[in-house]
Amino acid sequence: MGTVAKALSLLDLFTLARPEIGLSDLARLSGMNKATVYRMVSELQAEGLLEQTGTRAYRIGPAVLRLAALREATVPLRAAAMPLLQRLSDRTGETVHLSFLEGGKLGTYAFTYADAHGTSVRMEDAAVLPFHATASGLAVLAYLPPDRREALLTPPLAGFTAATQTDAARIRAALSQVRASGIAVSTGGFEADVSSLAVPLFAADGSVTGALAVATPVSRMTDALRARIAQALTDTAPALGALWGASPLLQDTPPPPVPEPTD
Image (tube, rainbow, N blue to C red):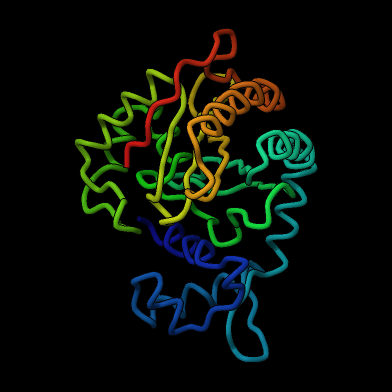
């Protein structure tokens, strides 16, 4: 990883649950030494990508707002996608989230909650989704070029729960099931009490660009709900993909049987 990439990777450490981070914690979370991190955050601060608070912690700076506004004005995807996500959430009664590839990471782009239940899966802490431990990640992995897929499956793979699958060979077998069905399923891989289904999303050139997923507490998932979510996902993906000229999987074919969870 180059110097610029290392510096920008510090921005990924900030989340809604962790909006401010001190220098020592930035060094600990990034795995880089404190002197290196200080030099990088100073440069990011000079460019307005980070700013220092009254407690001398750091937070995302105003330059990010300008870049986000420019991106949204050029490609107003979030505003256009939100009604589709909300309809999917209302239809399934569960949390819906949309993620996109950001270089070598899968970032959460937008999410919606349903009002059908008193409890739901929350997405505030899931800014970056691990490829091997989430339905969204598996949906994307299944359609990445082999070299990129293998790079992301290179051990060691992080274990987030007792159910996280970290055996690359078993993950490859699960990806074959994803390609056969067009739907990825994960139960407890990232969070122990979360079950989710996801479908891949594609760019106009046919390359995978992200995933659309529905997540529910494990205790609420049944075969009937799993089938309903799978149908709703495959119904929604074409309209969502049309926003950027994508070619969603299974657009012209009925959805196959939903595979059983693989992790």
